[in-house]
Length: 130
Image (cartoon, rainbow, N blue to C red):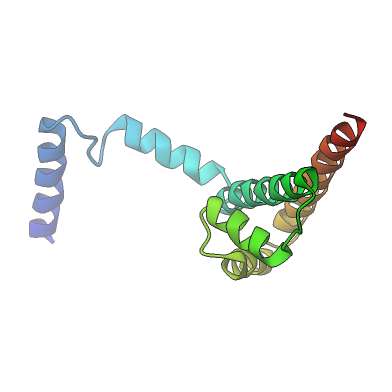
């Protein structure tokens, strides 16, 4: 146990001598407190929002050009842009978050879906008016 404590103290001191944050560094502690305040699913929701926006951007671009719109490919590309492996990976993470975090995540996810659809519809109407 003493050896472990000595290693931790030494590594902390070594990091401090290099100008890197150590275990007792106030910056590290403040960051940990901030991360503890934010629900774990917030990061996932940010990525899902990015994927939704990328999907609707692709859909709008296809409509502007009069091209065929491939839904599955668009979802896979959007998911990759947002940091997921593909659409299936994104859906699996969403399902897991719904299971683990319940109503809070589900409500935020539904709000994100509706907001993304609304932004798409507004942009589509603006495109049609041109």
